[in-house]
Structure formats: C-alpha cells, structure tokens
Length: 331
Ligand code: HPA
Ligand code: ZN
Image 1 (tube, rainbow, N blue to C red):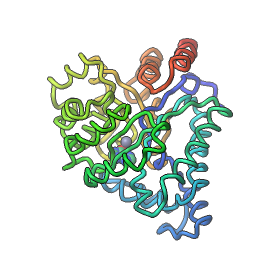
Image 2 (cartoon, rainbow, N blue to C red):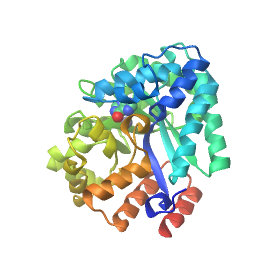
Image 3 (tube, protein in one colour):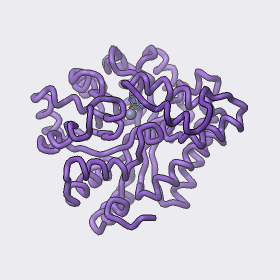
Image 4 (cartoon, rainbow, N blue to C red):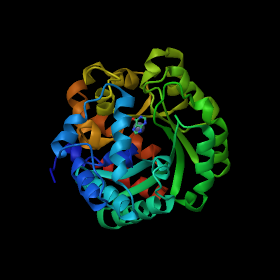
C-alpha cells in the first residue's frame, strides 16, 4: 500500500453504484462462469468501448456489463473485488447504490443479489475494517409503479438498507414522479437520497428537496446555474455527493479544470468527493481526490475537510463515526 497522504486519508464513499465497480477482468471471468457471450473481443476492447458522449451512452454499457451477474456468488465476488481495491486506497466506508430492477428484469431474484452483497459486506467489515451501507435505488426512467412494486418486494430485506435512491436517465424523469414512492419509503423508516442536477436542471434539485425530502443530493453540480438555490443548499447544510471523474467522462464538464467544484466550496456547500462507477470512469476514490488536488491546487486541509464531510454525512453509527473522525484528525 502506498503510504501517502491521499491514501492515508480515511475516505468514506457516499456515492457508488456497486454494479459500476465491475472491472472488465471480472466481467469476462463471470461471463465464462455463466456461459454468457459479451459483445467485446477481449478485456482491452471492453475498456476501449468506455468512451462516453453522455449519461445515456454510459448507461447502455453499464446495463450490458451487469448482465454477467446471475447468482449470489457473482454479486459476492463483485463486491469483494471492489472492497479489496477500495481498502487498498484508503477507503474505510462504502455506501452502495444497488439497482435491483435491472437484475429482476433479467430474471435474477432479489434474494440472490442480497445474499451475495450482504455476505461481502460482512466479510469486508471483519477482514478489511471496511464498513458499508446499502441504498435501494429506483430506475427513474421506469414507471413509478415499478419503483413502488420494488419497495414492496424488498420488504424482507429492508433492514439491510439505510436509504432509497434515484438513478439512471435523469432528463425527462423529474423527482416529482417518485413523490409517492419516497413518501412510502419515509413511512418505512428509510432515509432518502436522489441523483439530481447531473444532466437535469437545477429545478430537479429543488424538487428532490421539496417533494422527496432527501438528506443528500447525488451530483447536484448544476446548482451553479441557480444562485438562489445555491444559497439555500448552503443555508440548509445540504450534502452534495460530487463525482469529479464521472462528470468529466460523461461530459457534464469538458475538463476537470472547468468543474464547478471550487465555486461550490466557495459558496460554503457541504461537498463530498465520490467515484460513482469507478470501473467505467477511470478511477477510484484516491484517483478522484488526486485529480482534484492537481486540477484545483487544493491544500491538505481542504482535502481533509472534504473527507470529514463524508464521514459526518454517512449512514453509520456514532461509534464508527467517532473512530473514523479520530483517524482523520491524525492522517
Ligand atoms: N447517473 C445516473 N445513474 C447512474 C449513474 C450515474 O452517474 N451511474 C449508475 N447509474
Ligand atoms: Zn451515480
């Protein structure tokens, strides 16, 4: 393990899609295990195909890639593969979005998904000192009724989930579409987060706050187009889970140097840094911190503050939070 500041910094990752951690090497191994034919000649060809124009062009390959996940063992191996890489770069806590609708649509039962992932989370905690939380994500380009059906179907597993989330194609699928589902999730005692303001307009961020009662906005970077909203987010201490390398790879911004991050920090927002889909976007948590350090010239104190925001905002018990904040202070 490299002993440098960015690796030592205890990093909590609040915005990660576990299916987006599937590296081409494991994708090919699981394809062989499950006798599935991939449309890539080899591992290099898969990586070469990860040249995205926008969110949708990524989602097409993201859903294609996850087709190799069939049984509990596949989900277990997916998560363990990620946890080992993450731990090696100083990640101490992972909150994973899971997309059950994408698996159910392929005939994979929720019990298989959960069996594999829960076992991996337990092992990570014991063997890697890596804690985790799960977020039940709804695919926003599917009908709200499907999301409600998933929430009902997930009842036997809800004790594993800290929150519900909203992901997939944002444009044309406003948060308000899921008002009833999120209200139900709240009744069931789940926290709420939602992707908003990645490709969608600032009004989607406002909707997520007002209609879904979220405690975090995933991405949220388009808030810079609305000064009043930016002030509101600062006043409310709303957490934004920003994903710098993802934003570059999905052309939300042309270059990292053009990213709104410095303006968001100046405006006093509770920013966290995250990797989103590290297997597809060219880097994990340490890479995201390092890229920002280079692009914006941030000091160690700023990077420590960002890591602290994530620990403060994480779904974890106070014992773990105190432990990680203590570790952060001495990093
Ligand atoms: N945005 C929306 N949906 C997603 C993403 C993302 O970055 N990654 C996986 N599903
Ligand atoms: Zn995301």
